[in-house]
Length: 92
Image (cartoon, rainbow, N blue to C red; front, side, top):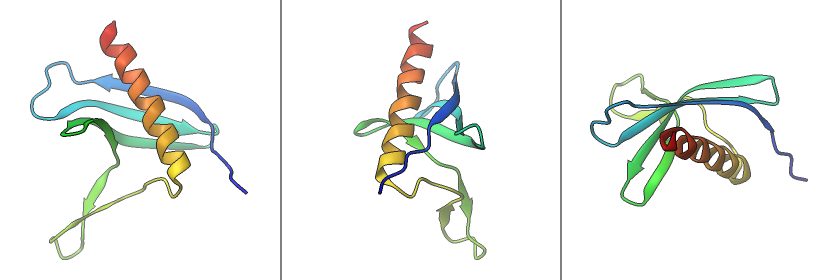
């Protein structure tokens, strides 16, 4: 049984003058119940992708994601929606 959390609100903030690979910040609300802040849009070797917030480990040696979608279905839905909104925002 597959359940998908509906994206009920989305805000994308393109970086005005990109430096490096960062292109935008995003905020997503799922099912009017959970807000995900700190998502970032990067332009990587294989094109645009959405990155989730990272935090350094207690030992300070590696990073781990603070939160992330558990299912590939939700990850794909969030990435598709955020990237479409990013493209619309930069198109004017």
